[in-house]
Image (cartoon, rainbow, N blue to C red):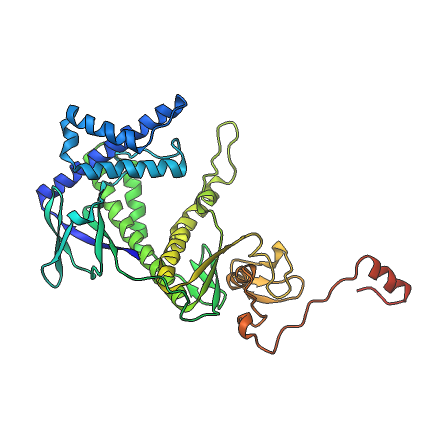
Length: 416
């Protein structure tokens, strides 16, 4: 099984400058190759990796600065572009902006990478044209290195190793016949059908206030000035800590859910479409733009898609099955009587059915509906269908319709 190991690099000034140079060259190759592909598509022709790799070798003779970066690093950039264009389309792939893109590059040849441990807290790796680079040994490597990616996050550089750890996905989960539904929300990040709430604040009160002040300062800074770059560095330091806490929370929650359940059911949420802007156009301006923007920030802050990715990654080691179901009406449907009514949900947390009077936490009720949508029944008391309690809720009263109603009137039976 392939897995990732990420460590923080300790570069000297010469190595840091060289990494910046490699990242700039890879960004230029990406943008030039993307423009070439788009120009070919405008003419009705195709361009792929093979001819672009051949033209890259010719371009190195004409432009010596291209030869400063390792050749297989530039070839890997073209491979990544080819995969992105085939997956998303040539005109939907984004440019790599100098201001908004963090430098990164990948060494695909694992046989050219040598990793050694030099102490309890330190290790070193030998990378082509960079030489020996020290990094913090924060976790064991546990596998053979297949490739290495170098990225910059804020003012720190990191190396990510793709290793073959020799593990295989279990054919059967350690706790079979266990299933759970998970409702992802804005108030609570993840709520299970068992009534467990998984949530944590990602930013402290002080960080939120400081971030707001820094954003106000950024709005008054002149573009391209040193002051603007300093303010951006402070903002990136805060948002980087928030991002790390969100990733840590998603990884821990995914580990708990995947370890304890053989089946995890989620809503098939298209986060990208849900968080699209409501501004509209000049001819047709949007409505409730500020409210929609606030909702988008809340959805993105909880990391719905990141949690799904973490679950899929954790499921590889436990044998858990991830199931996606249709999210329609899961928050408006009563779990006890399946009555659908927007008025069932009185508030964000209170669910009270207008038909049978069933009351529950709104997120827990939605999580139970999500589990039921995947074919795993949950009884009225909340336990799984494989071990239902004898004591159940009475069935809902049915209304007579059609022929049965006319027959009841003819027999003198009052209708309900």
